[in-house]
Length: 286
Image (cartoon, rainbow, N blue to C red):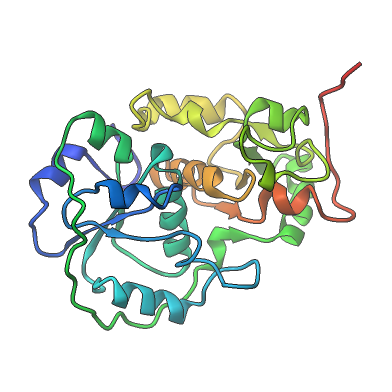
């Protein structure tokens, strides 16, 4: 496929390496109960809310706590971590982005995620693996991978000048302002619908095939370049709460090799509720 980085493995590769020392599988699902109904043998479970988020503040756990999490999961610094999950790897990509932001190396995604593994009738188990705790070393965050609200606001000038780009990966109806949340997700709605001024609408799913795998490098290049999102620009991606935009961040930075791509994890649930943040809306009931 000629992707920029070697960050994908196939379901065949995973099946052939289930018992290979140093290969560690982590399942990250939106539906946290899925793991218990059957997972890839040897895979450990990561809960994106309780494991990655601060228990009270709207923020992430600290780098020290990330080290403790990986230690608890029995993962060492030289292990190859393979992430996969449901929703075409939404939350696996979210974990990939967050762990990258936290300074974790040796990360890859299983192309197609859980849905492809299950569709192929491959082996699953309900047994949780027995792991031995490790001592994962201290981590340092890579702040170049994350965008905060005020940084996004300042970025609007770059978008206007053409040196920067904003990618809104939500559905067209969310982008236009017709709806304020995805179907069945009213708890993640906001006071105002629309999008950040100057953002390009490139829904995350346009980067995937029907089986959940990523499209070819050439198809992906054409998709983003066709919307003016090119490698020479400083790019920020966003959605509602950053799970879908993590998927697009992965495409842009890891598969296509764009050098400057940040994920705005506050996304629309923050921007659409914040005082003084500019919004564009293209939907009208008239």
